[in-house]
Length: 172
Image (tube, rainbow, N blue to C red; front, top):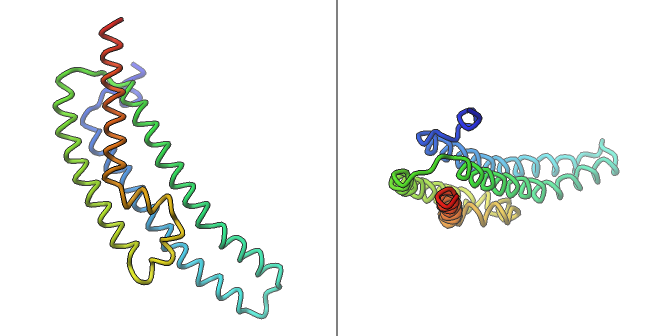
């Protein structure tokens, strides 16, 4: 009963979940870059405003300098956290040999989507006005530029967990 409540028995939800996760990751990365552009303009206005004290200017500048590292770390945390959740869900799902064929077909679709999202991010991040800001997010840039390879690693590790669970249950 608990497995159904967790959604572990739903094979149909696998595509929707992956699409949702990748859309959230892509949206977070793009919003981080655009947010940094906006924050940069605000920081420049703060620094040139004579009505603002020097200590306030320094605090805003310190916050601006910490923002890319913080957002990049959040993105990495979300990516690794979702990977761990995928591994957990693979372990909790009911496995069968017939499921492997369905999973392979679904994974091909997911790889195509990952390639499209990777290309979309690359086009946005290499834009002339955004490239100086997107380069301040090394983890985000690496993961999304190589998103197809990252998804392959996640899929491979998830399938390994499913295989080992199947073998473990078969043994015991």
